[in-house]
Length: 198
Length: 204
Image 1 (cartoon, rainbow over the protein chains, first blue to last red):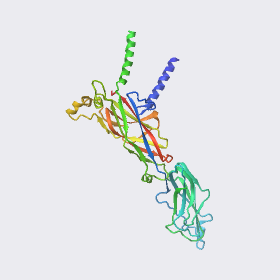
Image 2 (cartoon, rainbow over the protein chains, first blue to last red):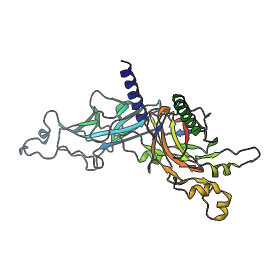
Image 3 (tube, one colour):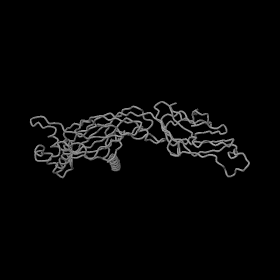
Image 4 (cartoon, rainbow over the protein chains, first blue to last red):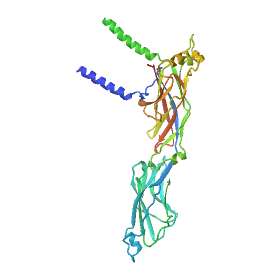
């Protein structure tokens, strides 16, 4: 019985010695008294910036094409019928952002670079598909109507220090477009997203 | 006979203890400062959606280890002590950084200055006969060996301090570079203590 206990003890000691190895050292109890061990301490000062950056994936070339002339459109029918009752939907783009807040919070706002014609309605709705970490905020619960020129609409709020994940992750952007007439948007029409201090 | 055997075993233990005790006292000095100052250009290189990334530190850190001068009638200087007593020194680093901050360190192979300097001619060999004799021996050269050609993570656990480099003989002016990776949750301004532990041993 005694023989077994001795054997097990030696085995455990062997494992501990192997785990420590030559590349690491237990420096928690260096006394400095021994000639073979000494320790010094020097501080490392770290000064970091608060920041918030954002992009829309697919980046570069984030673009949505909605509308056009569908093949089922009959001559003599209203062009608006191509959009159906609920309009056309696109969910191909994703919003990614990273932020360091240190107590302050950020919001994501959306606005257009030109007025939207009265016959066209565009809504955007961020849908969270987060693969990142931290305080990535809360999206609006209902689609936000874009269009009042010069008006920035908050679509995500309460962003602290966090990141959404990069690529087809983060906040999926659900666009819904309804057009009641044969009006097209200017080719240079853009929806602009920005992340700013709340 | 049994008594003789016991005495022999006891003698082995005494010798082993004496070998550790043969290491002469020296002085570890870490001078300079190190700081990380994140700039706008560092941020602009980031990809939106990802965690913050690494920033190179501004480091003027210089580490040195020399043996103490010996007083008394013989009166040997620190350099003379370093000439006559050449040991292996391993330098381990750890920090008290929070989990959102990862510190990495690097030292270039062969960096620093050997003390005494390598004998280049007869005059220096005369000045430092101990070092000259050592340099002519088959033992490891009096140089610095880095653990890696790239940055090595400095753990924030004192029980597992990481070896960054080792060197043979006294050495001064060893530069250490740092890099810091800070998560978005890291505070703006903070101070992290870097612990430098040197462990000496006899050369085999």
